[in-house]
Length: 141
Image (cartoon, rainbow, N blue to C red; front, side):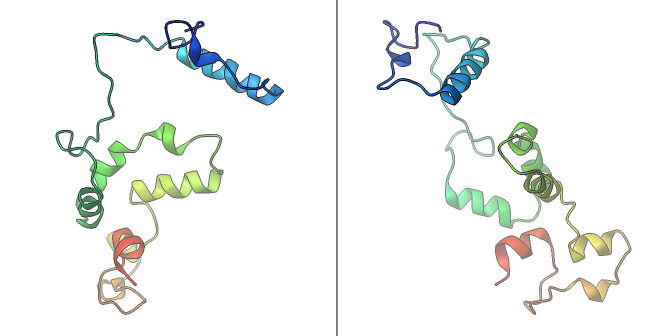
């Protein structure tokens, strides 16, 4: 790793001198890469867990998001490391965490908790649907 990824270590050559903050990032990157073991005989690839055979498609992702049932599956696919990073503002991380765990105060959630009555679940935009996170962020105009 200290020689770089290529045979002669070509991966760590720079066109210009690194700035101080870039050198700090390089040290951090090298520390993260210490635990990575490359295996020449094994192909490396990205896999989309909902459909590993076909891979990611926008159509499939849209169907998963709009079906309303796979909320638990989506929450398990979203890593905590993805949400809780230093590069994302805390209020955005909290919002994403609540969204993926269906903890936003939507009318559907408020009804389920006994805060509002059944007839008060409808979306305020008048679309006729129950106000859930899927309706708010994907379906309702």
